[in-house]
Image 1 (cartoon, rainbow, N blue to C red):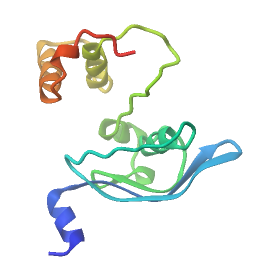
Image 2 (tube, rainbow, N blue to C red):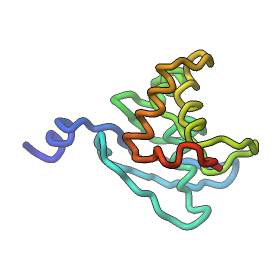
Image 3 (tube, rainbow, N blue to C red):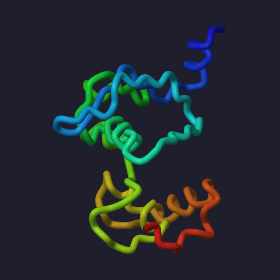
Length: 146
């Protein structure tokens, strides 16, 4: 089995090909390609301030226009309606323009409910607990996320 077949067997989660993006007259990303991010794989993106890390994430999340190809879960960003894309990809920025005190628990619950009705059920609360347990973050659940 070659590397490509092996990655597909593992379940390729995302690829980025020739992505370029920027703001108004300033291009920030030039021809970025990321091959085969696999399901369950952790990736770190490290760089100085203003080097394009957030621009890359915003582009992949469909929150800004970009050139190139972004594929997540076999869906292409440019071929998928934004309502469908937003159920596949979400992004929580490091900082907010609105200053509200959300706990870690609240932040996870907000992400869970962002594509459904807003009424919180016991099942929703259990799902948040499951995420906290899986990520070993239960001890931080009541800490402010900001």
